[in-house]
Image (cartoon, rainbow, N blue to C red; front, side, top):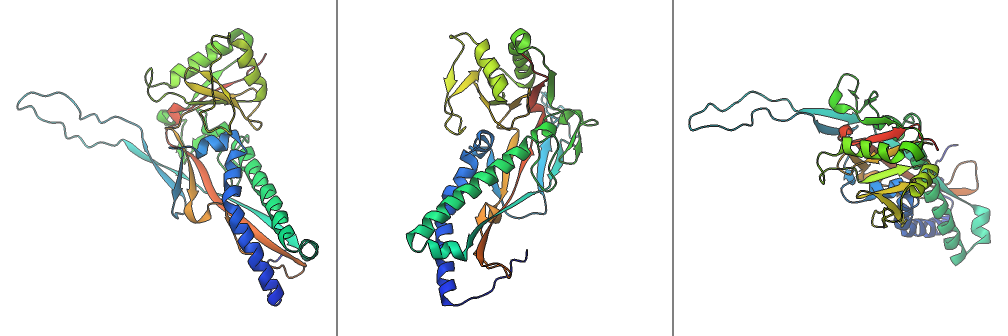
Length: 320
């Protein structure tokens, strides 16, 4: 379908102005709804996890993978080590590019003059934001990265995939922790303890701060806790849900999460990067050549990037 703008008189121009103003009014709430509708996206939107980037053919992330070996104690006239250091490698991620449309037929415009058309547009915007949110979240949990779409936790959190153009098979610093689980009743809590501790750099620093699974294993975790262990929190930015805790990390479920997998994520290891001029923006209404309608596009360029795969982990093959 060709979306070529065709002027059609003063009435159409006035209608376009009303629609443009209405879309502009609702783009802010619609953008908020995109994140609030989904637990994972809402967590990613939180502080330290989301940033805007202006332009770029891709997203380049400097990865620190080794310590500086020149650091050491010395006496008065000891020679200071000046060995050149190589501790940084660049991970490069392609943008995910998404689009959706709001369409209003001329018949709808005639039937909903005045304030009614504004109400109609509000409902259409809510539907678009919900649909956009659902699709992006679905892609985050796909078995493999979607072409031109988001990266996926399935490959972001493993020990073999090439992510950000860095091969984790040959680069051990770029491997996540993967624990093969089993019966949750028999070993679930033990597997969680093992995975959490493998990812923690110290007792209270740089530990996993978000654990997400499917609803079935969220229920299994809840039932495995004694009342004294069942601490909860709703201070996670996770769509207002009250969550269970494992140590200090909220445990939540996402409807799109891979069945029988539990992900251990870390705010210091992932970012949601959004291109600043394509932050879920709405275009002006245009009239297709072959339809009596007005169409406006919502566009977004964004990506979930990993900055430290060693701080991410998962438990697979969970069962009753």
